[in-house]
Length: 150
Image (cartoon, rainbow, N blue to C red; front, side):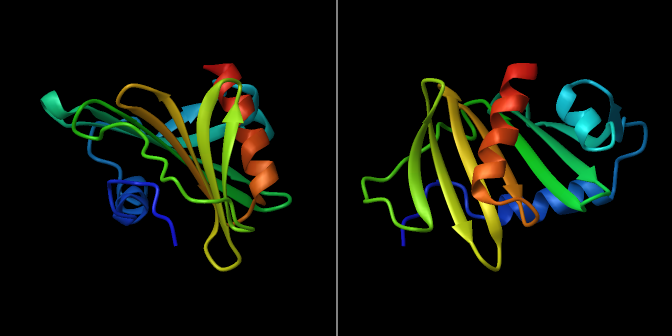
């Protein structure tokens, strides 16, 4: 199996911990900033973590009530995170390399874990979207809408 990250999948676990327990004085909700937010109920839980000279990690979680869906977005920026690593291995039914508007991306789908999409936004900038609710195709559409809104 191919692994596309230099950072272990603990990123997802840490995201869950950060989003579930906002720090005192931080803004835990970002409302109405894009069409995605409105299509997902108008609110996203947001957390920004500065790691000094290593970079900044921004985490957003969008939730929709009907039908129920969750999307976790992580934007990592800085030399401490590095750039997206795309291994040289063939596409499989669960792993594929994509081109999203000129940006290299990797889509992984697992029937138990859901879909994960990592997009290389440039040197030391990676956008990762994860969802157990949306299929890979829907996650790609979500990513394209998100990127257009930025």
